Amino acid sequence: MVLPVTVQEVSVQESGVVDNDKKKRPDESIPYSEALERTKFGRFNYYIIILSGLVLSNVLLETSGVAFIMPVAQCDLGLTNFRKGLLSAIGYVGMILSSHLWGFLADTKGRRRVIRPTILASFVVTLFSSFATNFWLILILRLLNGFFISGGSATIYAYLGEFHMDRTRSRAMMGSAFIFALGAMCMPFLAFIVINQDWSFPLPFLGIIYKPWRLFIIVCGITGLFCGLSLYYLPESPKYLLSAKREEEAKQVLQKIYRINCGKDELKLPHLLPEDDCAEIKIAMKSSSLLKTFLNTMWNQTTPLFHKKYLRSTLIVCTTQFWIYLIVNGLYMWFPHIINSMSEFMNTHPGENKLLCQIVYDKDEFLYHNDGSMECTNKLEDTTFMYSLLMEILYASSFAFLGVAINVLGAATVELYPTQLRAMAMCISLMMGRVGSVVGTNFVGALLSSYCELTFYISCFAMISCAFLILFLPKSIKDKTGKESNSNEC
Image 1 (tube, rainbow, N blue to C red):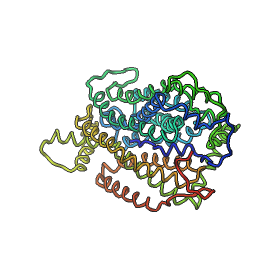
Image 2 (image 1 turned 90 degrees about the vertical axis):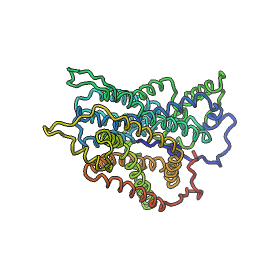
Image 3 (image 1 turned 120 degrees about the vertical axis):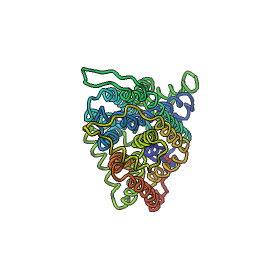
Image 4 (image 1 turned 60 degrees about the vertical axis):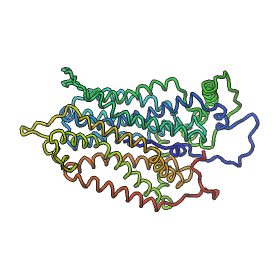
């Protein structure tokens, strides 16, 4: 499962600190934050919150929906446990490969200009995935899907955050996270409605039989199509426009927000003063070589994290993120497979009791018939959907608690680094989390066949170790002025 990014991560992307001792500005000029305050909080903000939540839900459906198709597609695609692990992880590989690229382009070309095409491109790739003729083709297509979908998943929080003030940003993040949780709850429903249908029809020109699991792949991507088309009617981030020295366009966006929120015709705005955290974007925009700037920025922002001063913090944060994502996503992607195996056993052996791991061993042992053909499962057991839904409900109902835990780690990452390094620190830590997702899905798949019990032992030990490891994090760092850094400063 893909874990949602929290409000602290948006604060990281706005990695500047407002100097409270600025010289008084002229009366005819106001800072961006004050101009945004004048637009109020209303319908437009709700549109942005809903869209952001749907984008995150789309990421969840695209990356985690494959867990429901693996048991029923194993004959059509020739899926062994090893191949199932690859298919589960490949989307995260694409996200890892592209996360820095989309983040850099979002800062230099615009948030909306990155989110819209990448989400639409991911849907096109999803459409082709449903017609994949073999395992290797669908593997490549899911890699491309992860590559493109990362553009929306990473950038949408910057887009959402820049339409909100500090005092409303937390509410906006909670709203989008709630929609994300609803999307997680809807996934088992969608899988039950689509995958367990009885129809199928041949496509001779491709040499495949089109079955419900192929349609489910498209269903998982429809949210992305809707979001991509909706972005044609939403503006670019006014904060980005101001950073790119496009003040008049920024004013037009703010006036549009005001009209939608307040129902009034015009908001008169004087000259807008950009925030201090816009400097990095300006530098990037002035560069004549996009690639050179990208590589230089990456190097200059990454290497300080591994200097002696921050090395301990970087290692602890990255290690913790790696194991949390490995456990959460690694186990989640195999959950439908495990539950379906248990349900099949209970239906074929009523009244007989066996340990979970023994059932999984027996399932893998009888995966192939004596003639070498693979055992085929055309439908998932009803209890698979029921338990998956129960897990999602528990996840959603405990989201407040999980959010606190995630916020603690996000806040720690923000507090441990100076302003100019916070964005890259969070980026590196989340990248390590996605690496953990890749390792986890393959790790669980490999262990289930032979060392099932070890999967759960290692997961418990890793969580306890992470909790112990975090105790060694420093409390915070101090900036050059000697004041303790505040993650809510912009």
